[in-house]
Length: 349
Ligand SMILES: Nc1ncnc2c1ncn2[C@@H]1O[C@H](COP(=O)(O)OP(=O)(O)O)[C@@H](O)[C@H]1O
Ligand SMILES: [Mg+2]
Image (cartoon, rainbow, N blue to C red; front, side, top):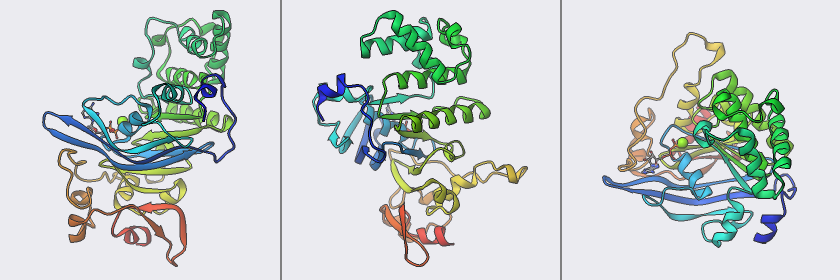
């Protein structure tokens, strides 16, 4: 794709299913005083126009570092990308020219973070910040930019947008601030949005509203969406497919409803068992025992083995690769993979 066209062209309408982002075998490590922390150890995932991928895993599993590598906002040093490709519409962001890269990151791909308050400038009105984003990228007048800011605020359903366009970030609730972050991302008319724990700081009811809004806009604009979360409950209704991460690797992928119904990895099983369920009020949550591994010393074999009730000799010795899983009668299960030697026991057991 021509970089100049990308800068000036605005958002081309892509056919649903057009591949947008393909991360291939990404490796990221951090060189610290204590040693090398292997944060991302061969992650591959892909998302197409009109598709939502949820990336799920406990804190420290490498979800954000993967996103930072995609966006080019990794702390380097101490971070280092040691292998892999990040293809955006077929071109590798890691090797393309700096100009071409800038045209993609932050324009064709927008990012939304957990903490809107620190992402917004506290001393500028939200209308100014929204308009400025648009003014810089589209070269409109200040008056037009302000009008656009009101329009964007209405788009993300901020009540009384026209009256509130001059308000400052701290005058909005957490949920409203996160809507403003979504509006910021939309102002670029991106092909892909990466949302890193976008609702984690919010109350449960507000979480659902913000998530629904994001899903609605994603569908309306036929964008790709990567939703990073440690909470499967929040993304289950909006994601198409899920990649589960553990210790910097993907341990399971599946269409979202299939993952829910029948996980194929003991770690996913554990995550599902720790979601509070309305129909099991009062019952204990089965949080997964133990802690995620120290990334300076990831266990031999399967990284999950110290916490796995099913672990046996092979799990201590041999790193499982992410293989296709099949149904009880050998039938193909589209999009389903597991990195457990004994996936069939979890899937069919
Ligand atoms: N700036 C950094 N310096 C050193 N190590 C880091 C840095 N950022 C991330 N890491 C390491 O990478 C691991 C994965 O981090 P992250 O991707 O943020 O996890 P999460 O899945 O919670 O988003 C961390 O546990 C940490 O060991
Ligand atoms: Mg994170």
